[in-house]
Amino acid sequence: MAVVDDTDRKDQLNEVQALESIYSGTPEWFSYSTDNDSQIKGCITVVLSKIDDGIAIHADGKIIHVYHLPPLLLFFTFPQDYPSHSMPLFSLHASWLDSVTRQRLREILINSWTNYLGMPILFTWIELLKEETMHIVLSQKNIDLNKIVLEEDENEAMRKGSAELLKTFIEFNDRAIQNDFENEWYDCEVVSSNILIIAGHFLKDPTYHYCRKNIPDVCFSLKSGKECVRFMPCGHVFCTDCTSDYYRQKLHDNLIQQLQCLNSGCDSSATQTQIRQVLTDKEFEIYEQRLLEMALDLMSDVVICPRISCQAPVIVDGGENSSLASCSLCHYSFCILCKKAYHGIELCSLNEESRRKMLSQAAVATPAQLEEIYRRFGGKKKFEQLLQVLKSEEWIKYNSKACPSCHAKIEKNSGCNKMICTKCGHYFCWLCGIVLDKRDPYSHFNTPGPGSCHNRLFEGMISNTISTSINHLFV
Image (cartoon, rainbow, N blue to C red):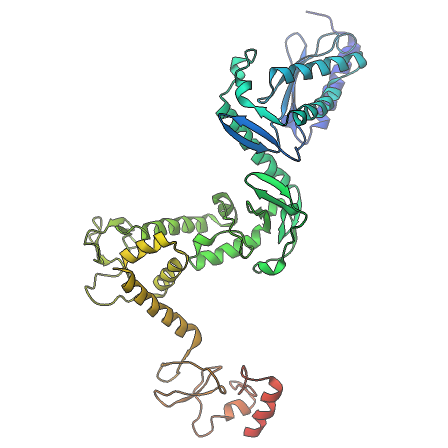
């Protein structure tokens, strides 16, 4: 066993302890051990800076642009007489290093040792590798992975196919970009750093102006990237809370095909990862179930059994214009349009959920999807007639009120808030729905007190000032 000089040993231990302190926040980037000969061996992960303009990676006829390269690995072993006489033994490894670049970096580190003979060198080497590697990479402007995997002097155990290497580049670049995003702060309504992402390129666009009026209700708060969602390729950033509220409303309205960027007019779709990020597990399960149902709904020969205890896919085999389906699992025969027990030629009675679902599907369907829907409902004409009835019912629902006596639907298109039902002749208040005394219907609007609509006879018709003046005429 070689004799270790006490001074060298002390310097070696001080150096690795200093590096441990430097990498205390990222301990996985530095490790070392002592072997049976008391030699210290270790590995340092050298993380490179972001490449602002990106660099092209070539592999198997494909070209991608990345902004972060996987780190260099610096393996070292301290000789017994380091640092007094000998420099550390070392090797460099990175999936994108060719033999020429590796040799050049080796020469740079060896030459630097001559200037620091007798002094600890590892930290200096780390800084040199960061600086010189970036100079070399930027001068090359591209990296050819096909060339690297064919290098004869590459260790067989370290070699991978170019396609596999390309995948590691993409994954590392995506993680690094996400880390950069999470470490920044954003307003919940901005384009990320005025950067537009187009076909994998980040392009700074100084002429781009963001318009706050084009977005739904959001909080406009300053939040960290960890609390935000960035949509691609538009680059719009919204906080997870606002995105979650917006998507929950879409889920409630059964508009799951429109889970995209919150900016009005932007068609950047949300990824499955982003949707899972902002919804609860239960909500995401409902979302996936709705997607499956929508896919099956657009298949003319497959429907879901409406029985809650069954829910099995059912193949429709009753003919092109037939609405009959029979579940082979629970033997339930039902109408494929309204999902109720089969009713022959009788018209379907659609519930509120079925109506909303049908209208939402028709509103967002592509021409090809509409053709599938037409076939499901017995032809275009029959479906359009049904759709017109549903739209009329929807309009009546939101633009009329029921008479409190006979429940007839009544529309108010002008006049005051004292209404007369043309069906049963009863008087009632349009605002609160209470039945009015035929002998003195205006007392409800002129008498203060609980249950009255005092001074509100003309509310919603003309200004409050004129309304107040006219109300006094009926006292």
